[in-house]
Amino acid sequence: MVYFLYNIAITISWHLLKIPAFFNPKLKLFINGRQGVFAYLEKHLSKQDKVIWVHTASLGEFEQGLPVIKKLKVAYPAHKILVTFFSPSGYEVKKKSEEAHLITYLPMDTAKNVDRFLEAVQPVLAIFVKYEVWPNYLRGLKKRTIPTIMISGRFTSNQVFYKWYGSFMRKALGQFTYLFVQDDTSLNLLKGIALQNSTISGDTRFDRVNEILERDNSLPFMEQFKGNSLCLVLGSSWPEDESLLTQYLQEKNTSLKIVIAPHDIKEGHLNKLKESIPGKLVFYSEIEDQDLSDYQVLILDTIGLLTKVYSYADIAFVGGGFATGLHNTLEPAVFGIPVIIGPQYDGFNEARDLVKLGGISVVDSETAFTQVIDNLIRDSSLRKKMGTVNARYIEDQRGASKKILNYISEHLSL
Image (cartoon, rainbow, N blue to C red; front, side, top):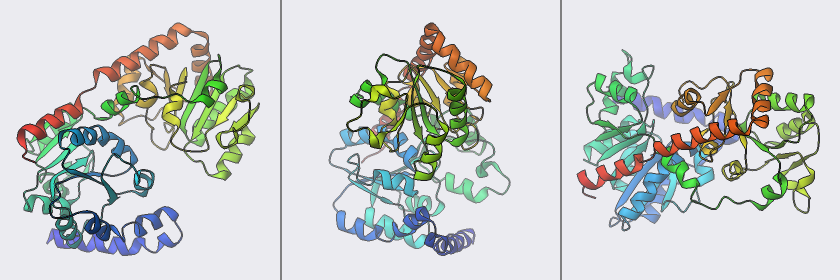
């Protein structure tokens, strides 16, 4: 009866979403992108294919799952890797990625869609990254005795699984063959609802960010822009974060070179940002034939460059810590530089740990921001000390993806 009601709710939600999709481009992608999923799968898969299915909610979870995907490709070269996304913000960025053999949206979690999807894919293994718990998919996988694991799971006591009304979702969670979680809290919460099929592996994101150090991060435009100056990179910034910097620049005469990578790169926001910043400023889209050494501020009005840009930073400020949700602090931290964030970082284990260890500084006002920046500019030993804390912490956290692959190879016959 509960599954019947759940299917009705999902179906109604799907049809209701079509109305705002006429006016919302992201929702339109969400709806339209799912129209051709089954045709895509039926075209590119045959009954003879051995498919490992990896489901991710969005871009962050894809990056989190990538170290495991890479190891699977090496360990099982004859298998095909299918990655599904729930969100357009993940799919639209990664739909042409060569990291997987097939990439598509996940059809909505109705019983009919699940049967058709699993019939088309017939996976030999299903992997769900971090938070994804879809009752009909998990039920369908269990019914077909397909091994299903969660990786980098993270649980908190305020989630539905631990509420008096959460029995339906607890049952769904119980369909997993095995759960790899990030920390003690998650493990204990699972055991508290009688789920013993779990272990602490750590967070695969640490394996992912360590891979960043092994690639070529050189950017000739950054070498010209930075020169011999100290460089601050404001990454994934929101207006609340940017206002700290603009106030600082209006009050200070500094030789600091600054790169801003706004979360919102729409023209309206970029123009407002440009108007608020004193001094010489250039957009990335305008750098051709420019002598970048003449500019103090560079705004990245594009996506995909921030991680490499962090490699040129002497100081990084990671946005989202004032209201919207903190962005990735590991990407700059892996380069061994000090990191600054806003005051709202609850729920981000790595930020909490690095604040405690001294690799991340927290600011909650323009005055605090100015003080921290001035201290870091002035004190090279402080920059080195904080950066060393960050790099060492990430190095020590490696190995989650290896633990997961060991389990797959030792316990599952693929």
